[in-house]
Length: 127
Image (cartoon, rainbow, N blue to C red; front, side, top):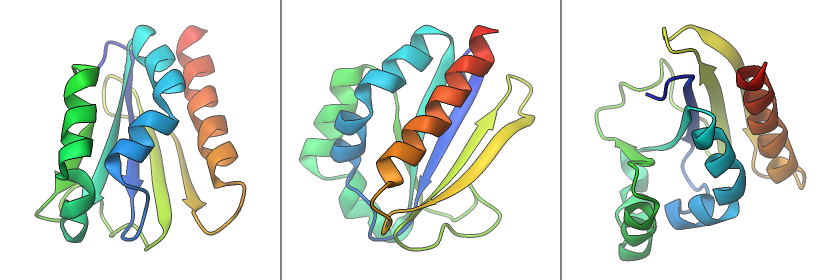
């Protein structure tokens, strides 16, 4: 957990692969991490091939931080993240929820929605 908290991106089944998420959002994740907020992407057990594939493992290693997680026991979220969607949570250092959202990956604007959530998290820690 970073000094300023944690942003969790729960990725539902049939979501983007780990390396795709790391690459696509590397810029905003780097900004958040420089402000003291860690960002992690959490995948369900059924999506192990999206997290443990060689490209995703290498991408996570290059970042020098554990950013891809496999929720093998289904304990990370109260309810599983629906397929083709993202469950987002921004937690304070004390694990208090600061913001939550759900993004449907089938919508064309899902990337914009996720970037907006991450930007709100960044603004929150900068004030």
